[in-house]
Image (tube, rainbow, N blue to C red; front, side, top):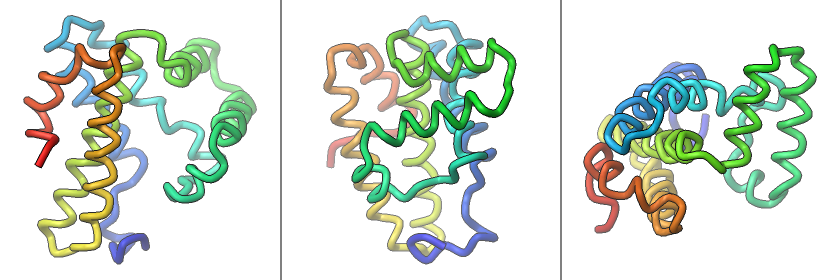
Length: 161
């Protein structure tokens, strides 16, 4: 239980990845990116968690780039088909429009879930909402992500307060 949300209510990795995928499809269609590829990238973005678990933000921040190395190694050890490994590597590299769509969509999905939980009375989720909103603002301020700003706010609502 993080932020006081019981496991029976907390979002699963599968539900999060599915919602991120749907948002990726919507966002990709708005900005002219490949819808299917963006959705596939969102589906695989958390695949490493089946081996390494979902690390809390504090831990992820402290270990930095080591986390990506550990996660990539864990995914490679799963024995997945090359196409899935290639999608995961594309997700990590963030060099394509579709991987950027998926990254922003993953953040939007987390923001939406934090808002849902907060409205259900789990007020400590405001910390997640604030943190993710700041991450989205920072991400969308980068030149390589700027093409997603308007469409992201159409989905997530205004990001500034």
